[in-house]
Length: 108
Length: 421
Image (cartoon, rainbow over all chains, first blue to last red; front, side, top):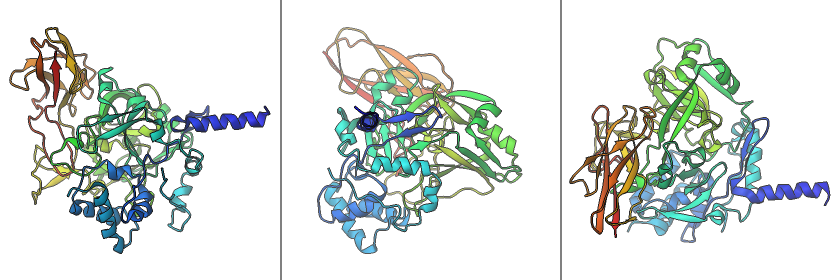
């Protein structure tokens, strides 16, 4: 195996180590590799609103780990994300996104 | 498993300045997001899961960089919880087992400590730019053992439930922190007479520019306490990157929200800071209980501060079985906001009768204090084990959990149900 191939193999192995990959080089630089988002936004009406906007800032587990919330609570979360955290969600998507969140983890 | 569409930092959202600030980070981040790790998700590595006893309480056990298997609450930003049995292994929580909590997703994944600079500026006579080497060589090192507990630890147990990070009881840890006194840095810079608070900012920030940067503030009197340190070591090692490498603030006795990670900016200010993360976020009712009723209006709210007294059984999990007729030693931990644990009481009948538990070695008033008690279930059946800690100023845990809309300050007497047979 050529030296280049060996290097490539070593790099591939390092990447396969993946989620637990961290290096602390001699010069003290610490580098880690974080795993991808753990899960995904499940299909449902207006799932695109979540995929296009919620996903900018956080993983879907922020939705699925919450207790089931009422429509009013989910709407308050959507409005907070838009008005406080600066989510570029268009006004006409606020209700759609609220409906999607209710379909995924709503308290009826 | 579909990956959300990547957010394109070059799509004209004005991020260039923010990204220039940390080119190393961007490079490393792209490596992780380039699809080379496709399929290698946290889920693929989950060996097992912990089921917390509330709705949507499934937490896969995942292994993150510089960490052992921990309970995954969220993957971006990363939030990892320490399983309760870890706290039975010793009074110190190892770096690998220490919980992780970030608020915002733009956090460096690569740090060069030789280039890291801590700025101290604002209402001071001489602004400072301090390297890690400066901190380690030019200021007196101090060590302190202290509990770091997330403000929202145990939020999942609130009834009625409240939105937010749905932690069980494991968003806490106890470590030996080494660093320099914040007071020494402030003295070196020289405070102006109108210095009122210290604003603390780290490298953590939002993905979109409009997101409020994560900034916290503490009063100058607290900042000048000798126990408040800028820590560069944790349990004798560098901090794990996910716990704030290369330096974080340590405010013993206070909730972790003030323990700013990757601390790179300290600003002395002459007004009370009211940025989002100080108001309305992280606020509690002003009364001594920190509680209110759901829907109650007109409640005066103040920034969360010291931790109330708590204790846990660590040697037995809820639902565990124990042998009838034989004695077992029940072990646990207790801690408070810095007055120190004076007593831990233990009950095997749901709080009808209490006996004194034996306290373990004292590692200082900010540390976990281990305790143990003898338990002999004379006959088969159910037993409700409880522990209640009392601190040195006589504060004890509550018999009913305080409720507030933020899901903060839970310190109810916890119950572990065991079955003797």
